[in-house]
Length: 201
Image (tube, rainbow, N blue to C red; front, top):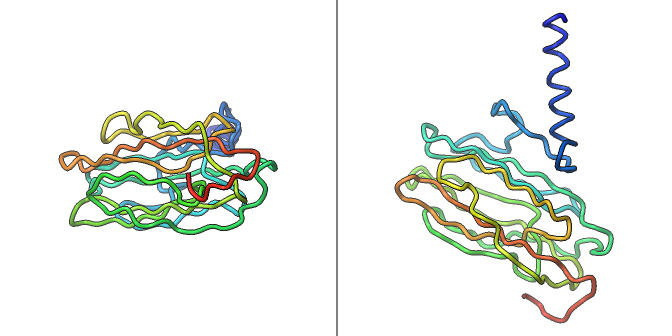
């Protein structure tokens, strides 16, 4: 086979596989780790929001010690089921400071629909904000924490929500002052199919 033709077809095949492979999510796998597909370059701030009516279902990240002990990030979104309806309001949560451990869920029973982050050279870490959306008066239940992402500081993060009934509501993170990296546990919850009277659960 002509090598030129192979180099033309290979990216198309790998992109199609990454978008619709084992996961069933429109989530592209980036095996070459180039700048393409990441929402940020190292040491740069970013703001990422899912399209209206969608929530974050996948988080991917790679770490670079030589680039300020920073990470590049990529996210994937999916539409919520019709049973949840349309988002009634969306907002940015309070900032989680760099260099500190933190725990945060979306207030007002919201679901995570985006991330915003700024890098700080002085602590070699980032501050974080969640973009949250509320769906009518639906309430979370059956919540649990994922395992740690990454499993060890400095490793790749590849978190995908395989359960369509569970949504990311927030996260808890630990920060290593030695490794200058952060481990995440995502807070996953189901949402009621009916309205409830609790403003924040």
